[in-house]
Length: 285
Image 1 (tube, rainbow, N blue to C red):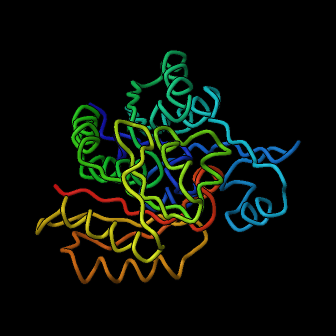
Image 2: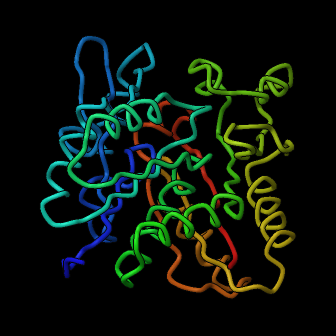
Image 3: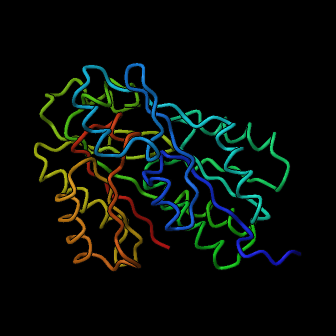
């Protein structure tokens, strides 16, 4: 067996809330998503920064659309990685939310240089991001492709993604609201708590104020985590100060296995959930 340094390469898509450069810090290769504003198409994190995205979001009357990476985008990444890896594990956004899985599977069929595994994370944003990071760690520890796939599959059922949006307007406009349409009849001032369940965004409950919604998310996390050591991250859309505050609360209330990662969720989540979105992502071993 070849003694290559990175035997297993980890690939994910831009719906993971990590930009390509941020992903590489964790050994994760992010295939960017496309963001279309009017007649201009960008690749998130490549020629569209997060700050510029929010500026455009506010300046445009119409919501941008996002589209998944193409099979060719994945093949391009696979071709580069096959130069130093002898297997590739690809983890993508839930197929209930995007057709990215189809692109990755089409790429896998056409790409024969090294074996490629493609897995539906049944998650999104840092739910997907944290699975990809854990896979990259397993690969860096020398685990082979089958072992890395096992790590990913184990994590899928353990991952919790709970978030609150500042307004339901974006979820409604973007059509990604799933069962959360149940909230639309309520006063728009309510602060819904949503979560990822079986690969879809579903309503969990509603609170009257932002503060209550955040406190309730921490309570829900406590119910699920108990006294176990927890891996946690925070996603937000343009509210870094609130995210930092939440991070401090998590560190004081829970036994964190590592640094709490704080990321701006970026264009995919920003388009569908809107500025002011705040989420908790966590799992216990």
